[in-house]
Length: 266
Image (cartoon, rainbow, N blue to C red):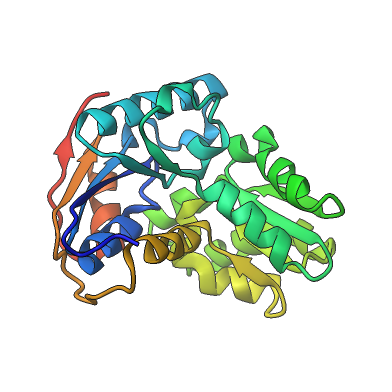
């Protein structure tokens, strides 16, 4: 377990801002941890891009965070995590992969081995979730659904509108008819929609939130969360590759306060 006297610099690599609340929570709860959050917002929605581009964004992001001095990197973008081609370029880094954590958690938690995944199109096409789940539990059946409209709904603030509720219901229908008993939130942007997703899929279905599992892992590493301040108690640096109005509005909506970001190029 990390002691309070030791300083740690964590990088959080993202594509579509879903990991921003996690980065802020880390900075607000562990004073010994400084956080550098990097979101490749210029390529939003990354989950609709080609595998080659996703991998290039991933490699460039890891390289930038490494050069900024981070030794632990959280892949908040599950699309990036799903398309990791090789770990050869990650020598000397500790990479926290939420896809692997969620797959194992779902395999262990599912009573009947009927597991659903709602994710980006790129994550679904990669086949990574069935691969990881079935490696841990060969008898499991994994059903995946692409949900490309989750991001635009949140950007427009329409997740609780009638059309937003209808889109979520349609996305989950195929999983519901398969009678899944466990659902992985395979896109990190699902966070603000958890209550709606739970209602639409059914109260009896267990939800697996990959970024919540990342936070649990950090608790094991750093100990109990000593602070509960909503404001950062340790450094939180926000880097984005595009700081247009939609990005800035999304940042403020997620953190519920004004934020300062640094635009960069990868």
